[in-house]
Amino acid sequence: MSLSERLNQDMKQAMKDQDKFKLSVIRMIRSSIKNVEIDQKKTLEDSEVLDILNRELKQRKDSLQEFEKAGREDLAANLRQEIDVITQYMPAQLTEEEVKSIVQQTIQEVGASSKADMGKVMSALMPKVKGRADGKLVNQLVQQLLP
Figure 1 (cartoon, helix red, strand yellow):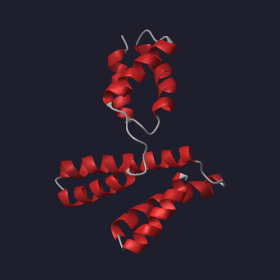
Figure 2: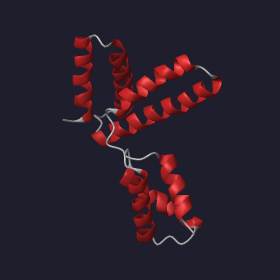
Figure 3: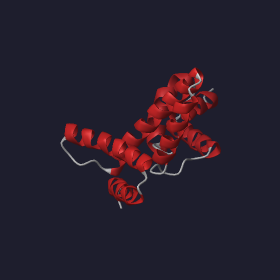
Figure 4: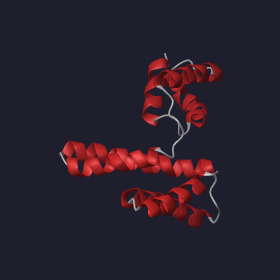
């Protein structure tokens, strides 16, 4: 079952269950997907839907940080629930140790020898961890492990 089909089924189930919160989050996600499909004039594949989910998740995490800084716990709690719903559709996240081993392997594959090679490492690495690891964590680990 594709990610889009799963979203449609979950939306129908949320309607049956009268889960208005989950329904609204799924509708926001489907709206973002539909906008991209209209712009590109094609049906999106799972990898492209995953990119949209990553973008939506990142936006909410950034907003969550800002709300927490401003002391707006009411808005932050709402965003945490939205993040929980979105993460249900994301692939299983890699642990920091798993990411670290993938980073080390990629550094060896690319033959990176200094921080100047960071761009090469990141371009080879990101497709391997796409959707399964936070970009900030990957970036930090690459910086740590490059001599």
